[in-house]
Amino acid sequence: MYTILVGALNGLTTLPPRLAYGLGERLGDLVYAGLASRRRVTLDNLALALGDWQSPRERQVMAREVFRNLGRHVVDFAHLRHINAARFQQMCMDWEEAARLDAMAARGHGLLVISAHLGSWELLPAVALLLRTPVNVIVRPPDNLTVQRLSEVYRQRCGYRTIGSRQQALREALRALHRREVVGVLMDQSSVREEAVEVAFLGIKTFTPMGPALLALRAKCPVVGMFLVGEAPGRHRVVVTEEIPIARTGDMRRDLEENSRRFNEVIETQIRQHPEQWFWLHRRWKKRP
Image (cartoon, rainbow, N blue to C red; front, side):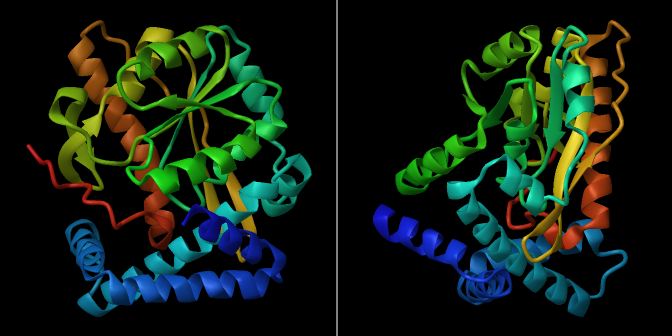
């Protein structure tokens, strides 16, 4: 299975971009038609979060585009096998903010980057190829061992170090920040109650992972949001927000909730601007207070 997947992904990188991304979209159509359970989750999530301004027909059109975007994301992932700094620059519209991020990390406490499963999130960490500062990304290993092996091989080309999402993740991330490095984390998915705070996400109160807020408070590091938004087949735009102000009242629980809310708002802004590029297939609101 691993060999077949690698062969298929390598084949995509040899095709003209328009053809490769067109095939990716058709793959998305097939998954939309074949995975009824995920299609229902997507439509339910859209109705829950965007139902006030979308009709049922509009939600169906949006859901289909969500799956097509995932197909395009597969093509982007295939290019990780051959990624380098020049190729990343070419795919990401000559991004020129590396110096600003390096400077923020060098201020003495590292840099925390929050992001989401939006656009081409697997390609985004390849910004590490353009930074002087080492980059660490907190990841949750895929449940499927074949996909896990594939992800590890392809991510190695991006020049960043992975940190496991459980057990020692917080400690390792703090150490990296204290070394004045960059730590990236995707914080838009559901979390267990013991590791979460209750704040709204897209207007719906739910459990949000508290880890990023805890890192920001303990490391006293600057925090920005970063996203890779699709603009055209094989062309992306890196979005880096202004530094997110961190609340420090001395009340730990209150600060965790307030900062998690601020981080969520940064992610929500991007989702509302590019709703078809977010991963609506995940049951984000399955655990609600």
